[in-house]
Length: 55
Image (cartoon, rainbow, N blue to C red; front, top):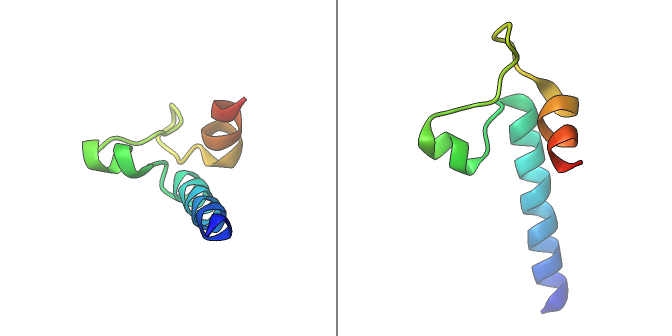
C-alpha cells in the first residue's frame, strides 16, 4: 500500500515537472489560464521554471 502511494506521488511530480518545462503551466496555472514565460515571450524551460522555483 505504501509503495503505491509513493509511486503515485513520484509519477505526479514527474508529470508536473514535464508539464512545467514544456508548457510553462501546472494544473493550477492551466485552470487559471496563466503560464510562466520569459520576457521575450518564449517558454522559460527547466532551469527557470522548475529548478529555480524549488530552490
